[in-house]
Image 1 (spheres, rainbow, N blue to C red):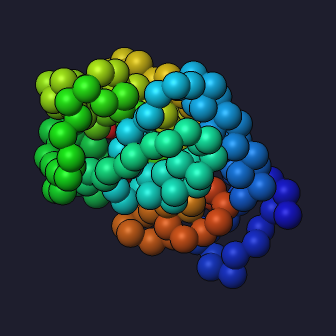
Image 2 (cartoon, helix red, strand yellow; image 1 turned 180 degrees about the horizontal axis):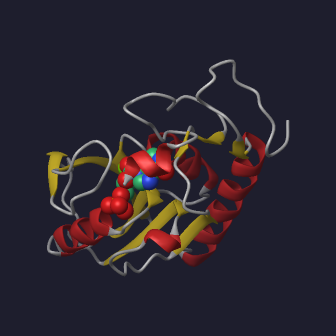
Length: 188
Ligand code: IMP
Ligand code: MG
């Protein structure tokens, strides 16, 4: 089923922006690119919970290098709909980053505030390198510049759900990335 078609019985999930096959192909490409760029190294892939969990699971399997992984969970002090930029760590990493080739795996970069905070925090733990891979990027929403090494897709300023992304904890298990009508205005 292609982009733009309706597929879910749930009325609030409207249009497919990126179908599961399109996502699968792009994640494979990112895996090949990362495998080439990190040849001879062992990347340490940190997934940002919960949104990046599905992307992380697919990406690590598309990377043909011995790698390790860890997870971090963060929350914003803002309300449901708007990132305040004040980030707190809800679940910290299990392992030290000292001397590791760290790749931070994020679902989507919106304002950039979350990643800006996390980069500064993780950099202080002395990794050998620290780069970001984000499945989705909304460049028009950026409030603060964040260096992103790998991006899956640039998307317009629309609120999306599925493939790990939620609205109020719903829709994470949709295999496609879908538009949620009116949610970009709810987001702020
Ligand atoms: P930022 O700090 O504004 O860059 O916010 C990034 C976080 O906001 C992401 O990790 C997501 O959890 C959430 N977010 C931003 N845009 C969307 C969206 O369209 N759908 C679902 N979550 C989003
Ligand atoms: Mg997130």
